[in-house]
Length: 111
Image 1 (tube, one colour):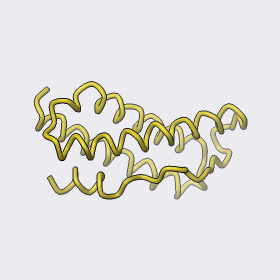
Image 2 (image 1 turned 90 degrees about the horizontal axis):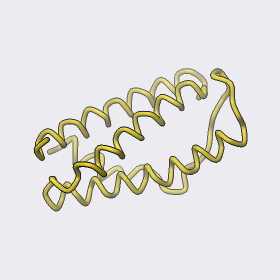
Image 3 (image 1 turned 45 degrees about the horizontal axis):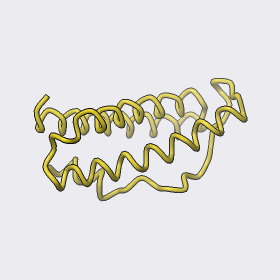
Image 4 (image 1 turned 135 degrees about the vertical axis):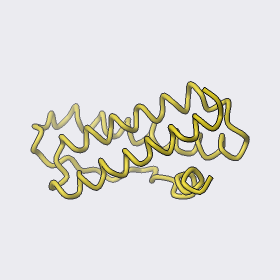
């Protein structure tokens, strides 16, 4: 996979994250939709870790910012999931201690 393909895949997965998040909000923040968002984030982080080295320096920095957010967010997500053991319909809500870096996300949508 070349750098352009990596960026295209990152954009696709970011669109998937956005879609899953909108659905999560529209469905009372139900665990089923939170889990879909978690899955997109895991795929995005795997892509960044496997192919991020092929990106140019500005793209690498944006990707690493996204990866840091995903790692912290995912740890919080797993801890809450383990403590709540939610049903698919149950609300699943927490405040991330490391918010999504909007500038990193914007970088991939503008490149």
